Length: 417
Image (cartoon, rainbow, N blue to C red; front, side, top):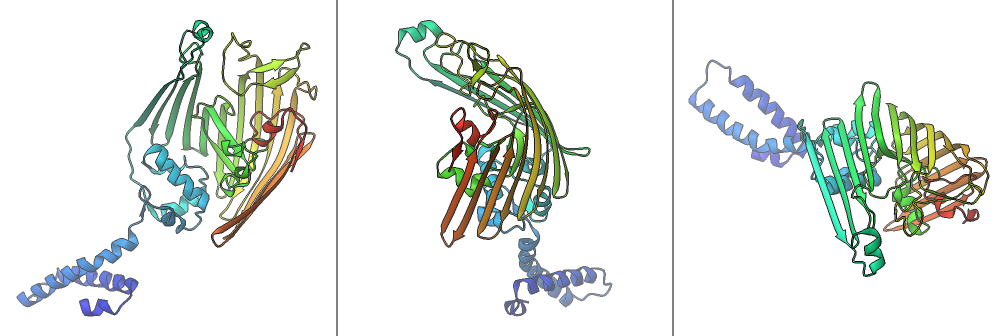
């Protein structure tokens, strides 16, 4: 057996191993066996077990919790962005405990999920899993006025708790900035259920949405005018919907979202209703929206929850291995008008897409809300070098609270570059 296997390829040895296993199994039921045959079969079985390591190496899928980036990229349909998202998820959460956890990875699609099932091994854990994090810090404030006004010396804290069971995931977040009175000055809760009846995901509570290049809804990485704004890593997430679990106190929606997938096609409907912190002029028009989340009434009037916002929209998207594309329509309504446009509601229409190849990537987005904005990125890999260029023009009639690039330019003039 050893001399035979020495001249064969690995796959050929696997085939011989399987045939030998079958012959040994048949031999067990033979009624006439001599001692010599028993010894020979015992030696043969030992050789089979030795060579069966080749079978295990081929048939045993990749351990998702130990896989490197190179291992993940060897899977059909996997790109650098999703591989990086899986690695980042493991670093953030410790491990992937079940197949349901894969749906919580940024960029996961139905096609990629099906491809992963054929190559990876994920431990199925049906028990509850809970995690908690508590962070306290002290920023010493020497000014007596600060201590007298706020009653603390600059204490801040952030709490986050999560609980997951099979396809259910729940989050609770509280945050206090230095000088704020209560330890729950900001709080957030989110519940997500995946693969329920016809729906791929049901989100209730606070959630975040990212589309295209971030003109309408943006991931945090898009809030930049530096080279990071044209990085293929940020532009790659053409569509993302996930529960909110941050301490940023902004750019999250509060309400519900339903997602339905049919192969590479997906439909999402969402709605949000919440209060914002805004500043007004003497006539009651909105001059700006406060994104800081810092509530210090003795320094400036407490403006939290003084502006009502309602949002409703729908998204249709297609996500394949090399192409992602989608269209969306979103209605924004505020209970007061903005000073720069004298409007308090707008219907925004947009289209977005991304094309990927071995060493080429293109992403673009077109937004219409009475004015036209667009953004596009192109990247080209050549050896160890990467060349990228981005072009965008930002023009909006109404402030985009959830946009990265547009919220940068508001309330200044339109941006081109």
